[in-house]
Length: 229
Image 1 (spheres, helix red, strand yellow):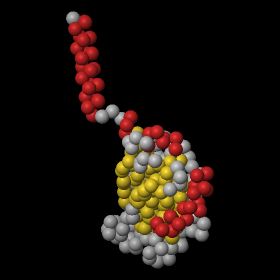
Image 2: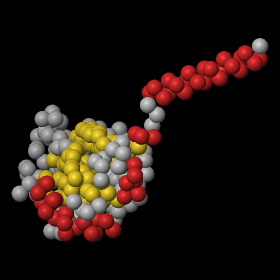
Image 3: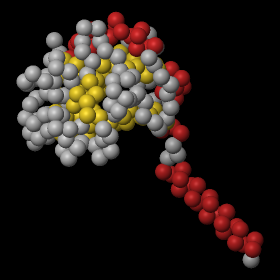
Image 4: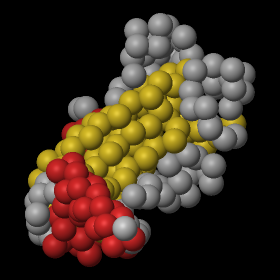
């Protein structure tokens, strides 16, 4: 059974708890709670029967401060527990943005740092699921994984990013962070600085609008000069 299958199978049992953990939305800010692990595992909920990942210090046991990763990495990052699969989730209620989302012009930016240990295949992924008002999945996207080949078989975290538009009808957005162990006794899937932000593209003037605004200001300036003359 794949990690995605496990997550989707457990989702129906945990959706109520997820909705209780929902938080307010705003444009232009990171909507993932504690995406940088600095507050431990706060904001993330474990699935029943599955270990929650852990927050660990950067250092020789994980990723050294000198190894690839965020420039502003802080003191901590996420890593898997010793079990073969670690996961946690949080849910964002975006029903207050339903009118904006209905236009199809609410853009998202999903990014973060994912990685692992040397040549081992242990990895982390961030699954984002868009859910409608009837609690049915609309679609999903996955950030990662970062493979050993991506990392040049070196320990570290690499930046990954996905952009797109929030599907029309989305009422909730669910974040599932998973770590999978494929080698050795430790689960060395790593993640840090996870970000999900929204932009109301409909509220951003088109380039031609800026051009018209500049042209209008030019006319106003010319008129003011004529009056002074």
